[in-house]
Image (tube, rainbow, N blue to C red):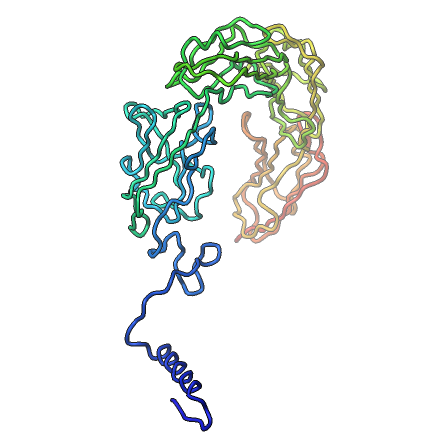
Length: 495
């Protein structure tokens, strides 16, 4: 309602009219909608805003655009993208401001040029984000961070970026976002991924230590090679062997050195690539390049049970793994265990043997295993010092069935004594008592089964009676270890 107030000015009246009109529009609704204002900012952290506006990644009012590429347009590498080597990475990555419908990302929608041959671009399929984290909840159908691989159109093998040449990536407008909207115009970015011929990586890695015995040397380059590269590659100190192309290399960019015999234990080897080394296209390497690695010494690399461990099983075998192949004739004289136990040594493979005791280990006992320095590797290398480790076995304990307080126990059901240690059967009868007194008989578990004693009533347990089964400290193992404290259980029979 509009009311006149004596003494108010014409300006005040006009303001009152405008305010009233706004109130009517809000509460009643205007008959005609005005033009839309500019788009407001997204909600905090990409979530829905206070007015319920959808996240920009799925906002139908937002035009899809490319907001990031790796490599960047106009950049010169090398980049953290695909190169030949032991790890696999995508050729390039594109981030959009919207969820993109992956079914629209076809080989014709994203193309690459500059490789000197026909190539095909496809989505990079591997679990895990690289190198950007995908939006939480993104599925296989939509995502806004897309990684791509480039492969040869003829054989589908990944291609290497050409040395010193520009490569262009084109993203067509046929790509659609989650709302069906297209890019407003094609996106093209160009970069030089590999400006020079270079060594990408080597195995073993430069500076690595404790390299496993029998390891060969593998060199990964960023370009196709010819056999002329072999004369520029050297191993120092010089060892017999030969360089060759890696048999599974699809582009002859990987070479390996096969030594005539394994590199010596504890030795340090240097790998050198001469300055002036060339790839198959005549590109000269940015060198010289040098790397080195150190071989593992001849030693024990694992033992079981582990040194200092406790509560180990009484039936455990003892296992030792060494860093290289053994001279098996040297093991028996070098292996000792204290306190002494009998058993047999078995070779699992050329560098791994185990000892099987012929009887159970003693409960609550500490054993020390020693491998003297007389043990030899197959090449004659010996330990620099004896190796030993110790472990302690579990204590002698039992469990009883039925459990304490069992009610309505079947009158013909047996009672059980369970043990992980083999029992001295002569000690069982005198160690067991049942109250109230009743006639019963014992049945021992057969050989090869877990140690146990079954106690059967001669006829049946009395009805509605509470019994207590007690096993005293007179119960002992075959090795003569007595139960440290009595164990008992109580049960009540049914009618």
